[in-house]
Length: 287
Image 1 (cartoon, helix red, strand yellow):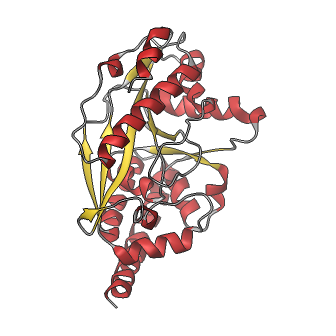
Image 2 (cartoon, rainbow, N blue to C red):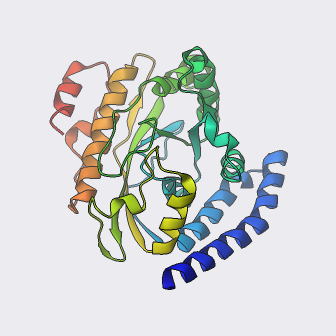
Image 3 (cartoon, rainbow, N blue to C red):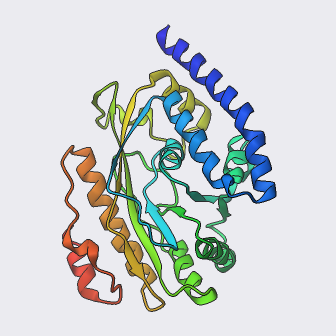
């Protein structure tokens, strides 16, 4: 009974905040007002309270621009969590744009939609992301290319990391900052969330969005760790594949420490910026 009452209250609150803020954001986006970046933060702060998510932030988002955040992805709630922390836009798969309501939300947050399976469009998509980066927008890349079960990190895809180098080649910027971000859901109702309970919030690719959303709303009390790792600055000579491997190792290390409930100390290798040096990746394997 309590779970259904929680579901009704959360759904009602979500409907109200959407009715109030959605037309305002539409106006901001159409007119190009700078508030179009700030309003989604307010919206998602309210939504995360409705969902019962407590966010524990470790570290800080880099101040350097252009900035690309390379994050893991296990739940649709990742969007809410990151958007409640900072002014960000997302690199999303093209199917998201067609989803009822959520597709509109993604467009109003100025997401860039990509078709990962169409290699012929990779450069054009990278160019769009590069332009946004050069304009100062913080872009979030869910580098696994899909959602995981929340217990592990899947291999990072290398293709869209190339957008950072496109920004260097096709715009006036000389370097781009890449920062690893680990998102780990750790507790439900104050109790440690082990492998058995993590599917409550995880949203693997074969799970429908509707049942996942309802199931999460019915529980309504979660803790999530968001860890910002040491940023890496790349230039035109940096290796895209090496960068993807380094980000994957750093995100995996941070996530494991969250799931193991340990304090995380950034390894020395995180400060390396020369991605053309093979020694970096020999060390990265030790993380």
